[in-house]
Image (tube, rainbow, N blue to C red; front, side, top):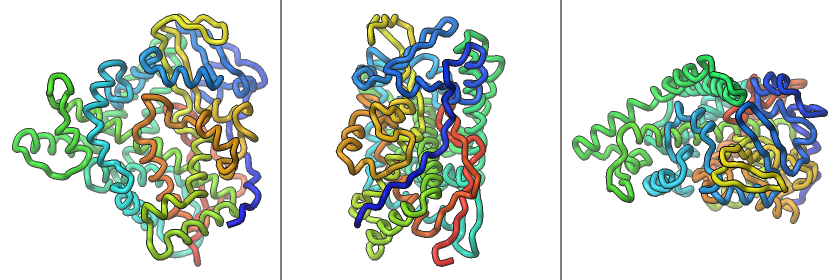
Length: 461
């Protein structure tokens, strides 16, 4: 298949300010979104520095420094402020734990992730993708819809099937979409107050209420099956949840308590669906803006799945589809900023960094830096077929982190997105309504501020 010219398209992102924001302006801009406080030099600097009340922040963007911070997990653990923000939603689970606690939890949950083996989960993903197509409907003509809640539903449905062996209904999906958006907004406000040395003024309590509302969607399943297994030895399904029940501490041999199971389930569910929903929403928008590239992807999907359906061999051969996912993750990494703590004194680029100082590795900045990427703000999935793009894929592409704390679900998320997007372009022509540009906001994850409106026209309709 010949390679046509790349889609000449620069998707929306907040216009950076000419100069560094004042103390007050930074507060106002960060209130809504972290990326709205960036200025022009943020996208080219090798290391930034911000002094906040009681907190000194460094932003290393030079690739060797990024590699060092991400690889030395014990010297640069997850920052306490991030742990505090996320604890209402996911407790002290493998994402927020540090040191020996993290190592022991990771050893306990590793067997559970055998259930996310890509060949094993492919049928579950295809079932959820077909359910998405049915929810949209292929009868009738073109319609314009907000794709974001639909992508939240399909992503949550896939992880629900993988965790619990049952699909997620529309009511549960609506609760998750609404409450997680609120949780992010309240957690963002509380974090901004904390950075400025202020009390959270009730925002922490609000975020905790929203987190409890999310947990209610699956708490009943967890508690019922926990009682049935630990009380009567009953195995309802062989899935991730069952593996968490059977996990044992590597030293004491103790199982997870029901609360600890809830924390691990909350992490797997929230991280697994929220980041994937972000990825798929932005990828749908990018495809909707690029008709020729969308048609190339549709041709690839039809050619590879025409008679055999969605097999692992077909999926592995979907080069363009995979590159669309990679490029979406480069432009819109679901987690745009990764805060780390400093345990021992270090020096980076001649600047002394003391214990307790915050280091922030930013996939958003590293992946949009012209030192690393040609036309860094442009959407060009074909860049990964070129030598420089392949090289930067190894060095300057970190939407799932890097090093020992690389996201354990990275392969799962990318396969899930490929399956859903492939089903979508096979059944619909996608278009972005004229003048309708989504606005990315960066809180805990990178989501569209007011949704993403997409025109969908059934193929052949």
